[in-house]
Length: 343
Image 1 (cartoon, rainbow, N blue to C red):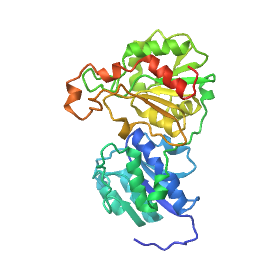
Image 2 (cartoon, rainbow, N blue to C red):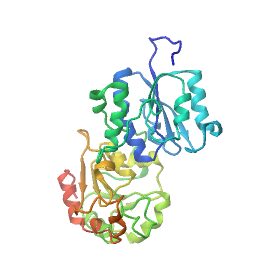
Image 3 (cartoon, rainbow, N blue to C red):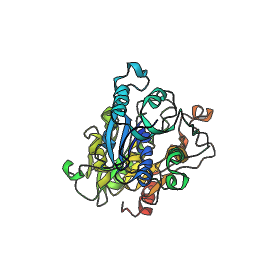
């Protein structure tokens, strides 16, 4: 669809990716390729899942952010989606890039006014390559707009507005993220959990070092931290005390993050903070923190022949989560040493 606009004006683009934290972080790999193709003064607007807008709020490369509360609510009944359409008709975009593969945003993509439109329903870049990381799939989608070589250079990156010092932390410090969204589950579905005894041992050994140790976790995960008490001297807990923007600042100022397969791993990697990530049943090749020339990522795995098993029957037949138990605190400490962080 064409529009009457001055070609000398900065280009405008809209990206649709309204997923969870990791999905949103991965999608930022399109920002620099789009700026390279459409101009460094590109006005890049973004459709996100409500609650994820803080990821982009401090990014000078991103213009307006449209949060969507109800992804599945049909467009005629969805005020958030209608607001995106209305904004595009007031000021049409040069490029629309829909990174969503589901049907929830097909109507929105069709009605957004843009001179060029990419992604579903106009083209489908299927997520059908075994062991392809989610970022690599985002790059293939971005290649529809900018070409394969420029898209392949895109990296997930984030910008922060606050600094960790505002939270009273002393530097240097290490961040430990001992939980994830599955911590309440008591059966095989808690497959991302590292044993509590391992976390206790790791915290005790880290606390004996020169760095402050900072625990992070969401408000819904605070109950888990009672299992780690009493905390060793030198360990401070920020569990449930940080906004998403503050969490980004904490990770940005850290010397390293130790975590399992969960959102903060992706935040740290996009902020170029070294990450030690413990993986077992889930597939680090597809959803692990994405390693780039700009960051340092160490993936720790037991390497059992049955893992990754998250979408197979092996997971249900192994309630003990052996592949997570076999990764030891000493292996974590060694990984921290390898990424040049004194532990």
